[in-house]
Image (cartoon, rainbow, N blue to C red; front, side):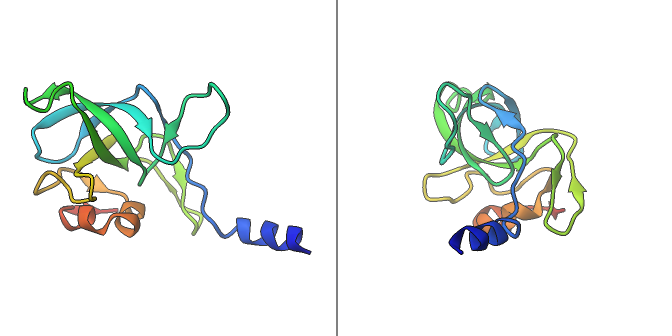
Length: 140
């Protein structure tokens, strides 16, 4: 009985296709001073042994700044993925895809480091990160 119930619930939980493996380069979409980010780890990713972690839209990740202000470079910072190139399916059946992979730097509490965001942001991010959504100029 419990097996049938768990299968029924599983189809209502949206499964995000994760399109950013560890080592991917991201565009920094805020005005914190960073230009390009490199993905290091994904928080909460549980995968197989020796398999690289992957991140999708709305995931909190550890990144390092590869291009940008000197005081931000070579530091491990936290960020939230706001756009990804790999297409993903929304629960209503539509498919979404962006032109680039982008992230917004956040403080450990979830507050964004920048005061404004460049480019669009996925709607899925606004549900998990309302403070980040407050600085968004366009939500798709």
